Length: 406
Ligand SMILES: NC(=O)c1ccc[n+]([C@@H]2O[C@H](COP(=O)([O-])OP(=O)(O)OC[C@H]3O[C@@H](n4cnc5c(N)ncnc54)[C@H](O)[C@@H]3O)[C@@H](O)[C@H]2O)c1
Image 1: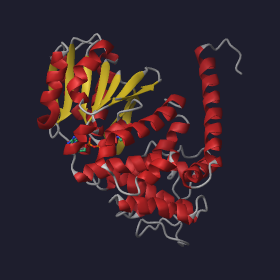
Image 2: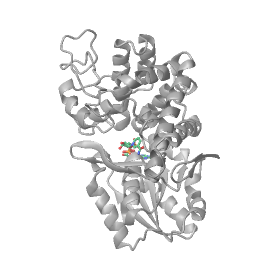
Image 3: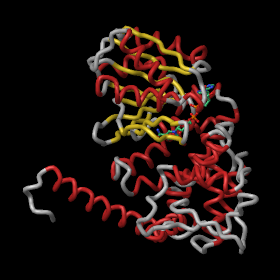
Image 4: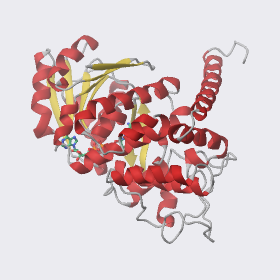
């Protein structure tokens, strides 16, 4: 069993071990005063795992109420969440009670949003059932819902009391969903861990699922602890996400989050290579790994279709603050990077990590540290520490305005 302690505004353990689903009640009981637990799960996950989860929770003395929600990104909405909140109210839930998410990132975001908002916050536990949710979405406390105009536009940063990850649950994942999880693993490899990146080159070995999840959780923990509220370093985790979110929306969510992020990373890598921010070889290594894992790398949509969505993405850097990003060579016709394109499309803040001027060095270094030298990573960390120090000073001043501003 692997336990990773995340020290955030609320600290908690991420526990990773096969067979954990059947021990959910026993592990959660000491962490909460809840008498009732609402098990939120998607309609596809329900027939697979809900019964075991209910048995485990009831065995530890919880009164369990199951709320099944429709699967898919199209249902990650305020309407679905309103259904969960009404369900909690109708079943007499109080703020001391517990919400348990059993599912992928969509269920986790919905359950997290409901937990953060119901009676101004009740306990939340995450039991991720997809690779993507286990390696990324269930950790760090972000919970967001989509609005008709944009993805993840409303949400909270609200930490769970525990994350229980049982890699055996991935056995029923369709191959496509498994691949989507791999996109987030690749992202973590590119950003922070050359070893992780290389280990994926030979393809994904399901027997190593737990180990890879643990590695990603550990990497994410470090970032979340330094920047829980997403004001600096945590934004590195958005690599490929501005285009990714735009692509998801443009496809009316037919492309999944993981697939869209893979395309987003490929677009950014090509653009970075064209701008000299990373070598062509670096970009090619990323593209080739994505292809090896069966992930898409070409954007099927023209730039104008993406432009509006990108401009509404909250993960972009704020426009107008002198950090305009130019995604040169994004062809309006084909939507893919094109060397020396005449019609240079300018997208403000479109490529948050790679192309925003003040962070350009940071990402180049980060890419370098993953693909070449080691010097880069140290520099990224230094910068992150500086940002963190500045943020902590500002926070201290806000908390006690009488203290002189440092
Ligand atoms: N909160 C965060 O920090 C964060 C981070 C990354 C992604 N996300 C969000 O996560 C979502 C994507 O998550 P996802 O990829 O897990 O998608 P998902 O939750 O839609 O799950 C994918 C599909 O797999 C099915 N499924 C889930 N577990 C299964 C299992 N064990 N066996 C068989 N089928 C199973 C689901 O019913 C669904 O149809 C996006 O909405 C994204 O925005 C959130």
